[in-house]
Amino acid sequence: QVQPVESGGGLVQTGASLRLSCTVSGRTFNGYVVAWFRHIPGKEREFVAAASWSGRTTYIAESVNDRFTISRDNARNTVYLQMNSLKPEDTAVYSCAAALASPDSWYLEDTDYDYWGRGTQVTVSS
Image (tube, rainbow, N blue to C red; front, side):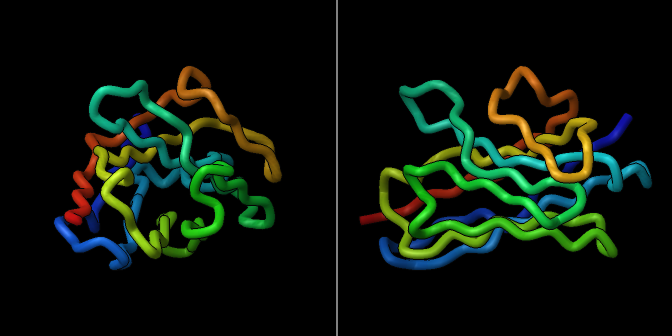
């Protein structure tokens, strides 16, 4: 199966930046939308951002779209989540997910994604 693998998490101070990477194995990167979700303690898993497999269309959740960006490098089978001006409330396990999709589409529901990484912990200290 397609297997996303996340990296780049860590412990940072408020206001710092992190870039998370999601590398998708299986040589089937083309044809898959890739999204980031996060699980904040005490809350349900929530959508963060998605990049269509064409790379032309991206979407970032309104709650973080002033600070986060998503980009895709199909040559490296990698999607990046650039996180700036991090806040303690951003502390969560960030997971990468993939699903078959048309070139310019994405999904917002976690149930629409078939392949999931194990997650990477992001902790933001005040």
